[in-house]
Length: 244
Image (tube, rainbow, N blue to C red; front, side, top):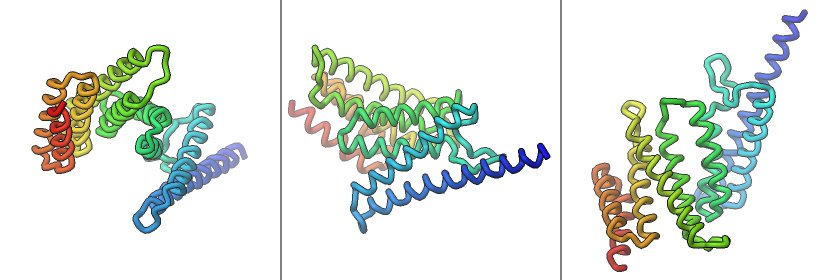
């Protein structure tokens, strides 16, 4: 009788997890659809992403309180989302907030996603971590270029720039530890972006020679990968920096 009840409870838990996983997946698919060239409804796309993230966060909190693993996706039970899938939902919404220059909101989500991956991956980081580390740096760099409300705005901006620099460098450092076959194009592209970000931060501080050096390095890395967008960004930055 006790065994039967336990089996029924486990079955109900699995069904609940499956339903939640499906709901999150549907919201993320809706976000893609609304963002497509066909629909172009960014307001509805954002609402769908927010709904997906809220479902993830609510379920994560519930599982933590019960002492359960935050992510699923194990061989024994793949009913619930794995940690990478949860981190993707969080970082996708964070990327939207970054595009909207809502950097505070973006940073909270990026950092939460990064924390999940760090705990899950331990001493074997993935390229997803490298991407997120640079995403944090990018959001901080964007924040540093906006008006800052503080008793000493210059000091606050300098602290923000320094923090962004450390995150960008961390992205490069972590990428250096990742070798094939785990290392993929995400690592390489993020290294280019992080190097570019370091150049932008140096430029923001008026260290133009250092900025040019970093932009040239980013360009060289992009050229090595035939990454046209990276080359164009570095070229544009070099033109801007050399005119100052």
